[in-house]
Every structure is written in structure tokens, then in C-alpha cells.
Amino acid sequence: MDIGIVGLGRMGGNMARRLARGGVRVLAYDRELSARDALASEPGVACVEGLAALCARIEGERVILTMLPASAATDEALRELRPLLSAGDTLVDGGNAFYKDSMRRALELSQEGLRYIDAGVSGGVHGLAQGYCLMLGGTATSIEIFAPYARILAPAAERGWLHCGPAGAGHYAKMIHNGIEYGMMQALAEGFALLAAREDFGFDAGRLAEAWRHGSVIRSWLLDLCAEALQREDALEGVAPVVADSGEGRWTALEAIELGVPAPVITQPLLARFASQGRSAYAAKLLALMRAGFGGHAVTKS
Image (tube, rainbow, N blue to C red; front, side):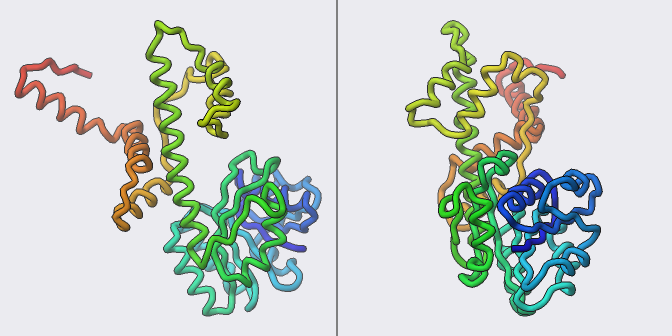
């Protein structure tokens, strides 16, 4: 079994390691030399200096997994790969792509005889040890070709990966997965903020989170992360109250609007992240001026 992997960041590099440790011969490429060097001593992984070398060294019908940022980077890699591939080869896009882009790519590549799988990947930095959850979109034949690799990447051979449907379904499922993640994270963060606000009760948030991990309805990996962080006295020191958004939360909110499906618990955390990035400052200043105008309330100066 051979596979090519393009993009050796935190996810791609560890996926290369997991596949190699599962017996796959991995040909790996990243434009950054440091990313290639990080895998240089990994048994079963051969880093190459370009896409042409990667394609040339894969025997038989090729399977190539791209782990690149959505949109421009993935499109650029696909443009470079297409003339190097042959009919019957399979491209697997494991980045967080917008599902409509995946549907477009699948159609374009199929016209050249190439197979395309959109793979939603969840597991983060822990995927190397624990496995990755894979949400796959594509034809049944394409999924059958990729299944041996999915069984190695997943937490177990027959668990943690799924053929979700046709092209676009894998990235759509991952988009919704991330929207749900936003809501769960926000609920936990708000709950612990309420606990911290009642100083008179003297809650030990770390110990309470640890207690909730065992037998409670809200036990989860996200709660595990909260318990781990809150049991460190200095966990929040030096952390700015700014939360980035990767883009999939936005796509989920827009999809809810397009479909007319109410999704307030998914949408509100996205808006909270915008606020944490300072994007509510203009509105807050105007609110302060309105209160001063109609009620004579004092305005706090910065």
C-alpha cells in the first residue's frame, strides 16, 4: 500500500506517521523544508522535494491525500497535480473545505477520469495516538479504494469513519460537526464563568469539572479539556479573551439561513467569537452614546 500526502502540518504530518506505523508506504511533500525535516526520521515515510517526484514514486493507481487550508491552497495543489495524474487515480481532500467547492472539484476531476473524495477530519493533535474521525463523501468505488487507509487512520478499523454520501457530503458533515462543537464549547465556557462569578461559594472549578467527567450527562472530551486546564492554577493567566473562528462556523450559520432551519445555539457562539475579536466595539460605543443622549447616563472614557 502506497499513499501520497501533500501538506505536513499538525494534522497532515501526524496522519503520515499513523499510516506509516500501520504498514503503509507514505510519500510525503510540503513546500516547507522544516515540515519535511520533521518527518525525515519516521520509518515508512519518504519525503520528496516536489509533487512530480511524489507522483512518480507511487506504484499503480495513485491515492493522494491533501491536508491543506481550504480554497486557494487546495485549488493550487490540485492544479499542479492534475497533469501529473492518470485516469483512475484518487485524490482525497482532507482540509476544511466548503462543501460546494468539493462538489465542484469532484465534477471537474471526474471529467478527467480522476476520483475525488472530500474527507472531513476530526481528531486534532491527538489523532496520532487515538485515531481520526473521518467523514467521507464520494462514489462507492472511490470509498472502497480509500477504505484500507481509512481503517488505519480511524480509531478502530470499523469505527470512527463513514461514507456519508456523494461528493460534498463529507465536508458538509464536518461543517455541521464544527458548528455543534462551537455550541458545546460556548455552553461549557459560560457555565464555568457563572461558577467563577459566585466567589462566595468558593467553587473549585477544576475539581468540579473532574467530578462531572464521571457519570454526568455532560461528560465529554471538551469537558476533559476544561478539567485539565482548570486544575492548573495559572491556566488562564496571560490568555487574552480573544477566540478565533476557523470559517466552518460561518458556513454552518449561513447554511442554516439558506435552508431556513433555526440554529441559534450554533450561531450565537459564532457571534460571541466575533465580539471577542473586538468587532462589537463600534456598536458598544454607539450604545453608550444613546444611553447618554436619552437618559444622561455617564459615558466611560477609554
